[in-house]
Length: 189
Image (cartoon, rainbow, N blue to C red; front, side, top):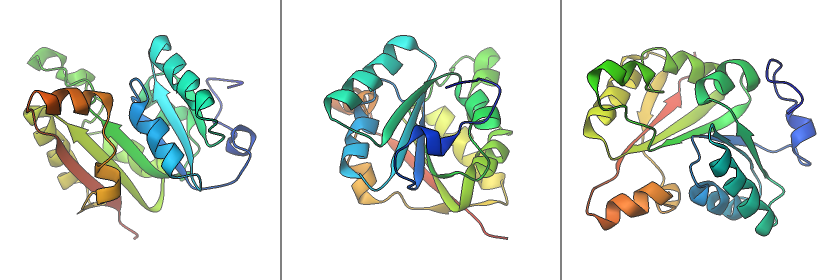
């Protein structure tokens, strides 16, 4: 990135103009690298605030020879609000975000009452957002927030997307902790 105060120049980032999907909080990038490999007709950006994790995304993407994958090291809400050009993403993926389980810390959660506006501004008409978590309380908040938004409609998560696990998902499922999923589509007004 040339700047953290100017929107990204997407044609400069990607050699091919293709639909853009963004994973907010890409963790060790296991999901994003595999999904980008399976979908060469799309461009992907992984957003992560931790340097070690964004380095893993870069290393895995280079090792796989992926030209359709980039990483940005920054806070997810800042990325959506200031760096991602408006109406540029076809899809947002948010998988196992920090649940901030203590009541006094919940204000730090990414998915809050303000989030649908940020998501709507980032997504193209008909764009989708896919959510996964293991935390029942956070899942209830996610579905309540999006359920209250008049700009989103609940949809199903496609099987081909659900079958690509994240690193956290593998770990939780191995301990018999189920994955809670929700998906929403931007309504066209």
